[in-house]
Length: 207
Image (cartoon, rainbow, N blue to C red):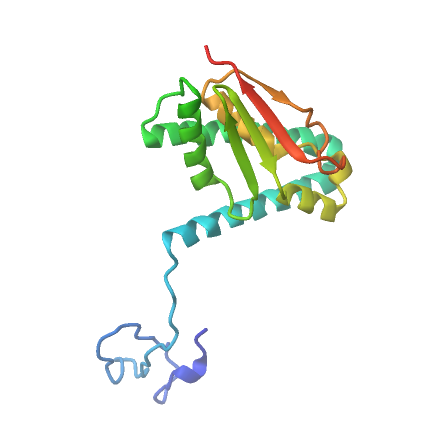
């Protein structure tokens, strides 16, 4: 940060200015404030770094919101609120993705895979560790090795009442694609909390 020692005043306490430029620096401004070149350098983030930065900030907001609602109203109200928000978010963001990419709703598994992989590239935070196995013509197996929601809810002491909002968001993606599907197992309680592997199977019913 800049400090006052970078500025020398001449006889009167007038405002100081900083000359932030690569070119020559004038000796002084009309008000008598001498100007000094800033030695601070700011590295410009890459596009991937900017994306991850924004995603991480958004996820932090999500966690803070959830904890505050849960502490104020209790999990009995916070959990269904979170599910509704995640489902609607999934629908809205995926409709925007379809529009931005000029894509139509998918007609088969190959098109579902293309759209899902693009959504993951843009919308999924870098610290999410999981795999999607597209099997045959209509089956997707989600395998989540680690889960930030599980870790956060466990740390907050709320995991025993937590319902999976992450997959609710993904189901919002399916809604936006106009897909009919069957999902197993039951996610009314976190699978990791129940001591199970977080593996979710989705059977898509193409028309």
